[in-house]
Length: 251
Image (cartoon, rainbow, N blue to C red):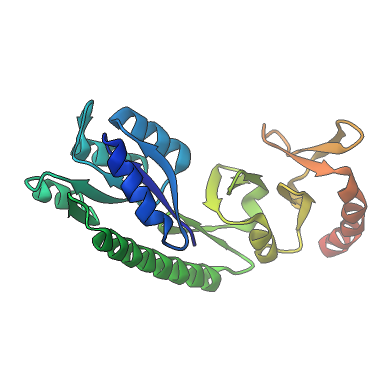
């Protein structure tokens, strides 16, 4: 899995050096660079990095306070401080920072730190995926939310919606967000679910109305809920084939 990195330092030369070091590592991608606290927060929210390299001092604030703010946004974010100041190590490790690298930057130290971090993250993802697989049954769908695993009753799911690289699971009482491709969730759901569109999987039990929008798309409504899904016209024939088998099951 690709490790997404955010670099934040008020010196452009430091950013360039770190990026050149990380560029040589496989499955490591610098998704954003920033030179102020405000810019870092904005780009972290937009790019959702896995790890942030932070300086201790910025023109508009403290790197320690910045790390605290970033962790409030994403508790799973790993923080690596890269700084010329050696007197903030206690504060840094109180924030459970992953490493504290002093300037001038030791290229090998950066490489070894990132390799170790990526190895640990990959191992955790593998273990979490195995746990999700074991917990998943016809009566409960196991999904990952950050480092947590949530069990959902499939009967409560109205539909699943792909939005960018995330999947929103809309239930009768609330919605959940998880990562991963839609087709993997489709394979783990029961026969009552149907891939109505490249971005949607619907629970046929909850469909109340199908409305023609144009020559290519239908809108799917779910009772009194304001949420809606879509059915592409090329999937209509497949849906008609599924409906008789669903009726037999109900009888």
